[in-house]
Image (cartoon, rainbow, N blue to C red):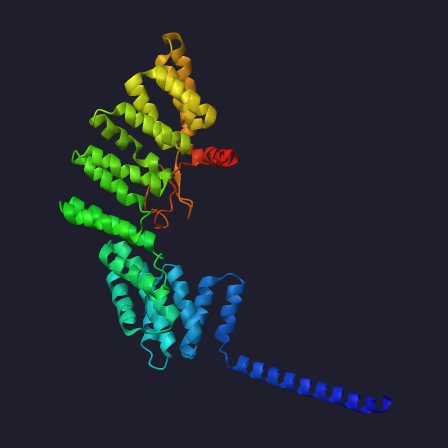
Length: 409
């Protein structure tokens, strides 16, 4: 065994020598590359380290003038300008990159996509659309870039409220993903937007076709049945409206509260107010919701008086204790109270109402935007159906109710 020791030692020495030579080569290459970089590059890095962003940008611009081949640095500068709101400078950089014939196809496409983003940020949607349509028509760039192109086009068509083009692009994205359920929610809402537009213009048959198309795209589209019921009720077809609204319970019962007042109005129009109250009360037992309860409360107050409304709130408050429910209880009690108690009750009610109204808001599940009214599209993040139909004040109560039902089951 000892006779192999000299050879092992020599092999180890050879490996060490090779490693030393490779390291020397790497160091020489690194030093060579460092010397080839303009001094402005290191100045820019230093400015970035000391958080002097404006000076860093000027230094990097100097680098791009001295070395036009520094493409990635130009991309980074363009994106930085766009984020800072200096869109005109971003446009100049990305336009210059997109016109360079020496760039590979993917980099030129990347420059065009950035240019489209610049134009969109500047509000020049037609310019952005023209670029994106050209990229899509030529199938330029990678598959990922083609997907990004369609997403940007979809954003633009939604901003322009060009719903038919938005539907066409979303269908293409569905086809590209190979998933027919992808974008089904968005497509259904685009059809609903088209239906509303046609209805406003008096084209009722076309509007109905759009609503049917929305349900065909997404059979869970509550909005389509809700809007269809509204139009039927407005034309005096209250029984058909009620039948349409009843379908929503099979789609998603949480949305029943959104049309509870309208349902009761239609029942009242056909002389069946009591039946309407019974149906909604049964729904409230199964799917408690503040909007639903508010409608039942006011209808009971109107048809049966303050005492019946007080008993209704008292019973519901035991099952679903909320600050909003207490507000309703005090409202009913105030109406039925003797004159000597009304002043004190009003002070208490106003105090409770001030706090409950802050909680009775809708909350976007995507970005956290709060709103007093319900939106199908969030005004802040532009997401579709990101607002749950429950108000924030009832989240804990509804969760407890569901837990109770599951325990009983």
